[in-house]
Structure formats: C-alpha cells, structure tokens
Image 1 (cartoon, rainbow, N blue to C red):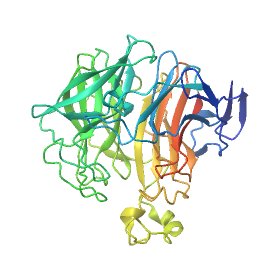
Image 2: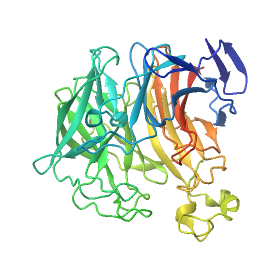
Image 3: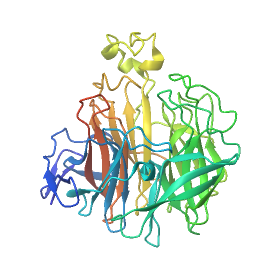
Image 4: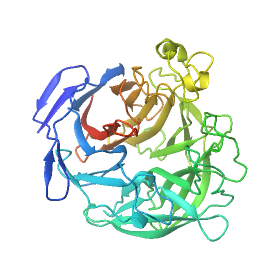
Length: 451
C-alpha cells in the first residue's frame, strides 16, 4: 500500500509505503522511511497534477543510480557502493556496483548476487527490454581494440525478467577517428575508454541506437578545472544485429567553447507523438547549463546544440548565492567570491529523459550550487534533484518540481514509467563520497494526472 502526497501539499492516502530492503534474495531488513519536505513546485502547469509517495530507501550505501523498469513492472536499480572493486584487467569503476530489484513496484527490494570483477556490469551504459521481451544491458566502458578505430564493449542479456543475467558477450564498435587516449578522467587518472551512457533506443525496424561520449582525434581543449581532462563530444552509435556490432553514426555535439567539460553524459529519447514523431532529442551535460540537440533522420544529422534552462534556474546567477558562500574557500584556498567565478558558478548534471505512453516528456536532472564545492556547502536551495515535464513534446517545459533542496547528494537520478499508465518511479541519492558519510539511494513513486 502506498501513501501519496500531491504536489500542492495535500495528502492522498493510498496505503502504507513499505521500505523493506533485502540484503539477499531470502533475508529482509526493514529500514524506516525518511521524513523530508514534500517536493516543491517551481513552475506550475495548470493542466498537470502530480502525487508523490513518501520517500523510501532503495539501496543502502548506494550512489548515482541507474534504473530499468521491465514490462512486468520489475524495477532494477544499480548503484556504486563503498569498497574496492574486484581486480580486473579491463577498466572498471573505482567502486563496486550493487543491484537491487523490486517486483512489487517499490514496496520491497531484493539484492542480486554480486558479479565477478572482470565480468561485472556497470549499467550506466544503458539497458532496455526489447519488443520481443529480451533485456539488453551495456557496460559503460568501450575500450581500445586491436586495430585503429576499433572499440570493444560488454553486452549482458536476460530472458527471465532480470532474475539472472547472462554474459558478457564482447561487442564490436567501428569508431573511425576515435582517440581512446586523449583525456584523463575528472580526477586526473588515466582513462583509456569511451563511455556509453544512459538509454538504448529500439527503432521500428529493430535497429538499436546508443549514445556515448569521449574524444576523436583533435579534441584537445582542457577542462577548466582539470587540465589533463579534455572537453568531450557526445556521439551516436547504431546496431543492426541486436547489439553485437555497433557503428559510429554521427557526432551529436562538439564545441570546445562550451561549458567546462564539453558535451558528455548524453541521454536519448525518441518521440512517438506530436508534430515530429520519430524525432530524437538528446540532452547533454556540459559542466554548466544543460544542452539539447534534435534529429529528424534517426541520428544521421543533428541540430545545433543549444542551452535548455528549466524554471529560470540559471547556473551563472552567482549573485544569488555569493553572499552565502563568500566566507568559504575553494580547494586551492581562494575565497568563493566575485573574483572566483569559475568555482562559484553552478552546474546541471546527468540528465535523464523519457516519453510516457501518453506522450508526456519527463526529464530528471541535478543542479549543483556551486559546481564542485556543493558537497562542502550544500545549503543553497537550488542545490538538489529535479523533475521537469513537457506537454508539447519538448518545445517547452511548463512544470518543474524540486525533489531535494540544500542537501548532500551527487545529483544523479533515474526515472522510469511503470506498466501502470502515468505512474513513474524516480531514484536519486543522498550523501557523498567522504569517508564515514551516510549515503543511500532513495526513490519515490509519482502519479501523473493530465487535465
């Protein structure tokens, strides 16, 4: 049973939300729900009404969730957890990954067995249930192959609704002009890989599309905050054989003058309704404001990328928080004031984007105020996790809700529509990477009503 709170502050009693989290497939541990302010409407569309369940714990110790909802309603959530990953010859994330599954729409969660290090999945690369029922999941890392322009990835599959995961099977990527060695990661460490990210799209003919980010030859503009990290570009790959072989189709966006990171963390959505059915919309992180680009030819060509600002949340408006932060210093000991605009500015990170079956678009994203000092000083109300809604197929975003505000979070989210029409599930984290800090993935059900 679920208890929902509508976005105008009223309460709709649909039952009691359970927060049982299974430590294994057989043993359950009940953890009480947290009490936090109700989601806050920043921009309201009179034709839309949202009801939110109470916040529930999804994955203890987790950060930066990825999620898949299957046709049966199974919610699969993967996130990084504390510890060291098992040794592996292939590049992997600096923390191990854990996966939990709910088969009762979030009332209880079962932790899946951990995978071996060299064979483990990082579902940031994307997951999809195809029309024939099979589930595909891509590990995020594309590594150098034996020949120039060749990349290698890992494909995992499930034919039983994610009860078991088979694989990995090696994927081949044809990536002419790619440069696997152009950049470090955002911590200055070697990073010989491109990164698959977020969503896989199944086209009407059965071909698959996937977005990734990284570098081609000539991409050599340093990030403003990490000189060994080069600004990235976002790219599109297509597979005609179910994910075994992928070809680079296009660059979605590249511009060395944009943001602090270039174009990374892309998410892809395909419209099925409206004036442009079949249109692809791609949202991308830049280290500053979020950007978007569109394609009407299945990704062969793209519009010029342009900024998308939701509800007036302008990450350059440092005048709105400088007085709150000027007594603090950045990592180099410089005051956070008007003379330090780069560190003082904010950032929008890791967008997610889906189209509901009724044609409504839903975006999830995090806002960091300021860009990197938000974990030491998270007090500003803009610092948090957001949902935005478009009733006109992405032309405008007329309803924006802030889920968390002024709290520690990595600002990474995921959102899925469940098999119940107009019922969403959204996940986000609270906490950070500091040693001893409490960190967990939380979630809420969201009921959507359109007048």
